[in-house]
Length: 287
Image (cartoon, rainbow, N blue to C red; front, side, top):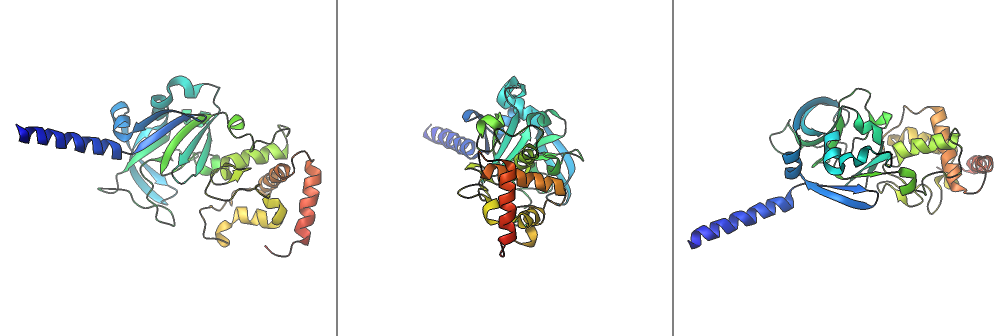
């Protein structure tokens, strides 16, 4: 009898340890955690799919096992995430990387939450220059147009998914007072979709790269030419997580600069900020 009890106890303890160690995802509405689900719970509730795609991060075809992203959102938030009360979804990685997506993108077919690499018998194939393990959760898309350049999120080491209204959750990032059809607003949208993943604005945003406006704006100590060039080709200057953005047009880069100038001088006109920044750029002799 004692042996039977000891065996049962050991099995219960082992099961408990496995449950604690199982990969988990947090789900938030704004700042409030509404649910935490581990991988066994997700597998018990959702259909798993074997998918194949050309992965731009691996730069080759990959085979994964995954849940449809919309199914994950339904399991975590119910119909709440489809409400117009929430306009964006933020994917937060374990290192602080934050990828923002318009909520409607997640309603499309093609988005998946990967939880297993089928090209290996165990574990994950390393990804990126630093040979990072992308698990336990990695977001991918099957559509040819569903790329990061088109503001579709592809975060790995995913730890949290949050639904929110971006301008309410990150007021220091939103350019209050800027006209909807202005270059500042266009630059803001580019910043939100591309730069916010790694960079903060006024101490709100990503944690991977530096804050671009605190304690001093990048336009205060970098010339417009250097900022444009570094955004397009950071790999020429640094070993960095920051990807090249060669697809951005000259107008896109000017819009980003206008947004940065606007944020640097709250309460001042864009024309005044632009003139001062250009003047500093002419005087600056070191990058």
